Length: 164
Image (cartoon, rainbow, N blue to C red; front, top):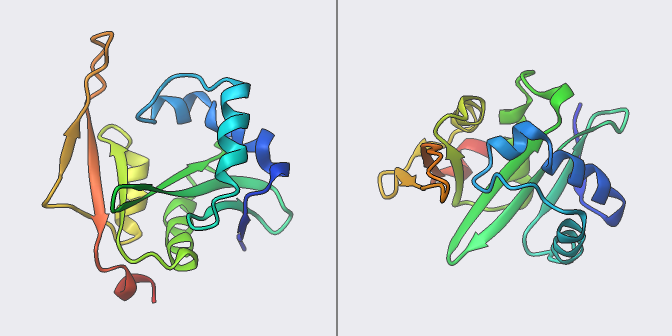
């Protein structure tokens, strides 16, 4: 059984380590390493924002499984999820996404996923997300001309029906 709670200052190191996990960095839109000072500044501000949930997911033994955050870009609410290496490929992603959506109460949420991040695409699809007709792909270009492909936008506009 998974447990969900709001992130607190005690989680700062776990989230930092997860955020700088090589696979997480590689599958993120921003692939740059995050410095400790940068993380502390961001984390301290982020946990104070109670309008946008930031969940820590643990198992029944309080082992850290991952984190789920909701952010705002204009009128858009965006979900992001990271799972620690030991709990990846166990089919937990879609379960974590569904429960986090239900807890958050948001009914119109988007996820930005790199096109080569098949596990995330599968987890969000299994959680009920569909490709958006409005903005299906957003291509990004690496300044160093190291092509990483595009960013797929998946939107879930019928969330109440799927998680109610």
